[in-house]
Image 1 (cartoon, rainbow, N blue to C red):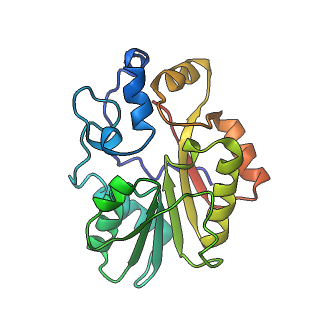
Image 2 (cartoon, rainbow, N blue to C red):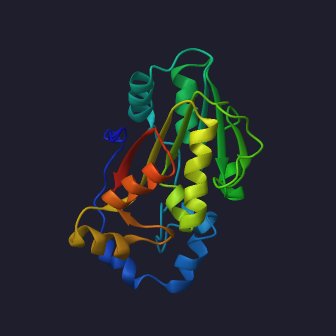
Image 3 (spheres, rainbow, N blue to C red):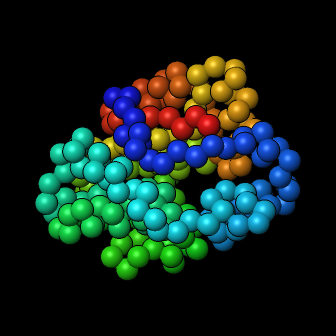
Amino acid sequence: MEIDLLVDYPKVKRDVFARRQENKELIEAAKSFGWEYFDRKVPKVCYGGYIYDGRWIPVVKRFIEHFKIEDNEKILDLGCAKGYMLYDFKQANPTLNVYGIDISEYAINCCPPEIHAIIGNAKDLSYIKNDYFDLVISINTIHNLPEEDCRKAVREIQRVGKKAFISVDAYSNEEEKERMLAWNTTAETIHSVEEWKQLFKEENYTGDYFWFIP
């Protein structure tokens, strides 16, 4: 189902076309998803400093209500970055079992100790049993993979989670497409909303989804 579960995430104004002027070497460094991507402040390429500030608290509340999350359930954040959303799940309900996977060793090393987080890639979750997680969340992550691997990630999310939510870069018209292409630094798979819906259908994805459109 198409539903915006990130409606409460803080919005910021972005000069999307300024990205075209960024230093190419810095953008390439951002693709390593290390310090430059998360915490380089000057010049800012991506987050410009990603610290815990409670921004995920209202989002977590909405997830808990929407998915009717109960005590002791298992939640996976695929592309968890520094694990702050999972931390807020744990604060909201200490009985929850929260797990994170991210490609960034830097981000994993920054995760709060309450989080079970490992380095991994969304395209291969073969070490996880079918339906192991009650909920799998992937926010602005799988589009960073080439399309073939992105499709594998969708299939893996469907396989390991009883319920799921995916957010990806998308556009609905040519103006939005131009903004997206100007803004993008890391995404390898950028589709229109309708193309994403078709991809989800082809990969038999039955979870919820929504879009990031700068």
